[in-house]
Length: 109
Length: 112
Image (cartoon, rainbow over all chains, first blue to last red):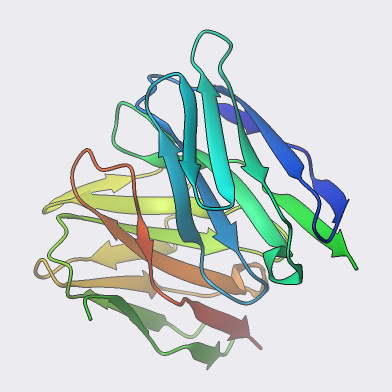
């Protein structure tokens, strides 16, 4: 079967750094994406990794290790507006994008 | 601005009364998706279109149908909504082999 595992909740302090992990098991793998979703809103794309290594986009970075079927999203200089749910997602060989269950990020002042 | 539009944003229907949700896009993307998302859960893929080719998820109930009359529009029909079908319905688009999906704002369906 296909599955993506990520923690259900993470709590961090404003200004700090937080890492959200994702492990996956899918039929075919064409890249790991991360999406952010605020309450009541639609998911918005954050980042994508097709190859091993770190991709940086401003305060957000994403890492992939294909040999370990593992990736993570790193958020730096946390702001209160970063409070949201974060989903990892994998594109499989059928061109479907499969989402993990999401990690709820709580930020404390 | 190019975008994904969903109408209506909020829909209330009665138990068993058919309802149609619509999605349109100005991105000219060839792949369109319908997701169901319940509170505090991940989006669950119902089906997707690769151009005109319809791809149904194995666990999508027969109660859910879809139409894509052209590249820009896609509809989700719920033939006999049950209370368990109350959810946010998200439409998304992407280009073939693209890693990024563009989501519409969603339609929140309430079943009374």
